[in-house]
Image 1: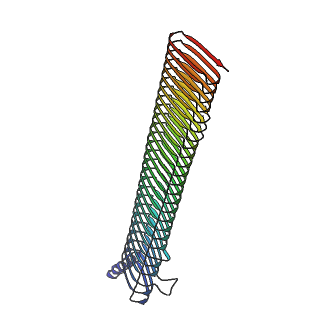
Image 2: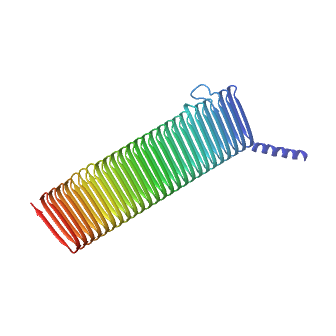
Image 3: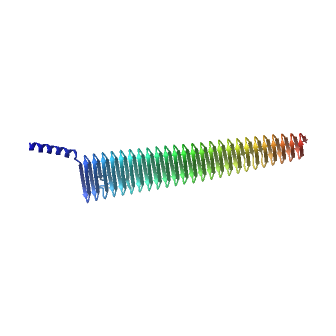
Length: 588
């Protein structure tokens, strides 16, 4: 009976020892190699192969079914020397593979959890890698060297189902990846020398892709939240990219091709989208978006261009495109659903856009050199469009209120346009074709409208309307014409048309329902119209050279018509009172 008991006990003991058996295989060929393997638990497996001199390996397995393989062996030279590998596994079914193919490589792998996987391939000389996995089902793959030297890579995964892939080719590249959360994905590819990449993911299901080609490129990606996506591509030397995403479902894309380009993207909120594309050298882009569902697009091609986009609110859109040298664009939007588009082609162009409120829209297009455009809109549903083709043109648009609209088109050189509108539903259109033309439009009130078209050189137009439903149309075709229109009140209308050179028209209307129409055809005409009161009407038409017409009406329902055809006529009409009528016709 006693024999039967001991036989059964021996059988059980043998079964338990078989179930808990770990496996370790160490093969060392060379001199001064050292390997330490510690296994605690069941069915752990360790395989160490060293071929060379002064290699050191340490494996510590505590748990169940962990697998480690360390290979210190060279394929591109006879032996692998002075390598150091440390593997620590604590948990279940973790898997680690380390291949040190070269000299002076250092690798550290620390796995704590279940079903984590680490793959390290060091090929070359003097590279360092560190993998830390704390959680379940994390995956890390590191490839260093390929006949390069002195790479450094570190991966830290805290959570579950994170994935990291790092590839370094060349010399002295540096990559740092930190993943805290679940389901994050990082992909780093470095091909060149002295490139630096830092990826920090804190949250769940974030995705980062960094590709660097060249020398001394620097990329930093920080994602704090869930479902954020970042892509960085740098091809050249000395490029810098900074991406900071805080929130959920933000998207950032940075593509820099050239040398010395700098991009900074900050997105705070949810569902923001930024795209930066820089081709050339020493271009700088800065994007900051605070809120939800904002979109920013930046393209810069050339040298030393600068773009800044700042959106604070929800649903804003900004698109900036610059081609050339030393172009500068700044977009600042505060509010919701604002839209800004800037397109500058040439050199040393400057664009400034500010929109505060909601549903405002601004478009700036400059083609040439040294053009300047400044648009500021405060309110809702304001619209501004500026087109400048030529050199040294200047445009400034300032709209305060709601539903105001401004359109400026300048073709030529050294033109100046200044538009200010305060109130609601005001509209202004300025078109200047030629050189050194100047247009100034100032409208305060509601439903005022002004249209100015100057074709030629050195024309000057000044329109000032204060009130409501005032209307002014000025057309000057020729050179050195000057027009001044001032209307204060409501429902006033003025039409000035000057065809020729060096004509001057001054219209001043104060009251309601006053109407003045001046048409001067020829050169060196002078017309002065002043109407103060209500329902006054004046029409002056001069067709020759050097005519002078002065009309002054004070009161209500006064009417004056002056027609001068020929040369050097002078007409003075002065009516004070009501219901006065005057007709002057001079013909040669």
